[in-house]
Length: 146
Image (tube, rainbow, N blue to C red):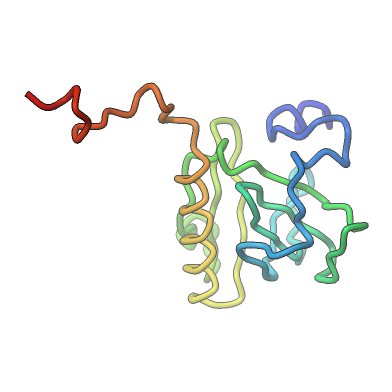
């Protein structure tokens, strides 16, 4: 089952392989969120780090080069990030969805929730594989002019 989770989330069997992302150095966003567990649906407070298209989580906020994430989601696999107060019936809740899974989080405030949604949303757009270079049409290039 764990290998299925790694395949779905893009994690390799090598737990130290984070595609060269130095999560301990200059992250795009960090902060505490409460995350619902994958198998046992309990809520646990985790330290999250967003960097270079990956959302990592740790048990504590003292993240160093030697730290090992408890999990990581490549945001390029994510389809949506949006509020989920209605679904969970909890304030400051939001969800992150891939094709095969939905993860739920609770922020400490409405502002934190909105900031995380915006940061993750920006990262999804930046790292999305939905548009490749060959699909981009440059209408300002000479070949497009008549």
